[in-house]
Image: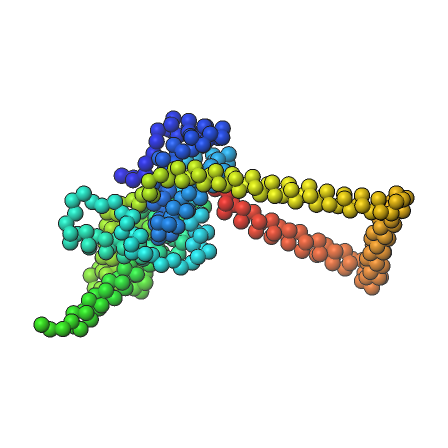
Length: 205
Length: 179
């Protein structure tokens, strides 16, 4: 099931009409509904909360300023995510490498209500690993992967959001999956050898 | 068969046919690399599914509203700056002209000076046109008219192609932001 939040079509249309007539209150409702989706996209793309906040704010600002260009036959969330994805890709091109802060990632997650301590450590460790690996693949491959696996969009929807052909989306997903799996294997073997080294170096009591 | 092909099949987005599936299965039984990659991707996709969505901090929409106000203020200031710059430069130019008018004490002198400046510009342009015409005529005498026409056609084609390329680059850049 998709994790995307959506208001009723009537509500969305009403808020869009209000926004088009220069009333920001209507747009505030849209922000309330879609902030989570847009923020999550920016966070997965950029890897830290500070940049994600700035990108999400900028996404809504650009959307508000370009609302007249929005084609109402198209889904509003795909339009928003398209702006967010393009903005993040642009930012990443400007910055290129951004090191992910472990603190940022752990603070960002909403905790499971009943986790066992061991499970929490393993889960956080793996989630950190996924986020780290995600930051190592190309911006456009990353965007395609996020939209497919986190947002559960179809190839066609991703092709509309990112402006690629469907076959390009498929080949980007294929490449992204392969790269991520390879990086995962590499990181796991590094971690294993690190643990082995520490055990070997530890003093015998 | 090459190992690389099986790695590609392992992550293929298109459905594999039954023969490809069988070949992949039998390859995987002997290939540790493929087993590791497949296991890695399974772990990654499980982690993606278990991950919660990251939420912005409380008050996101209020922060957006104040950002919008700031942006509006910034735009107003920018417009005011350009309006000020344009009107003040116009006023300064007009002032200089008026000053010249009053200093010289004779409007005829100012007008004749202005007339002289315009004439100089016209003469310079005329000279430039004459120079270009002389070059074209001399080229025309050296090169036969058919080749000359060909050269002109090629130059125009290059110019047209250049404009098309610039247009494509500009439009391509615009499309990136034309959500």
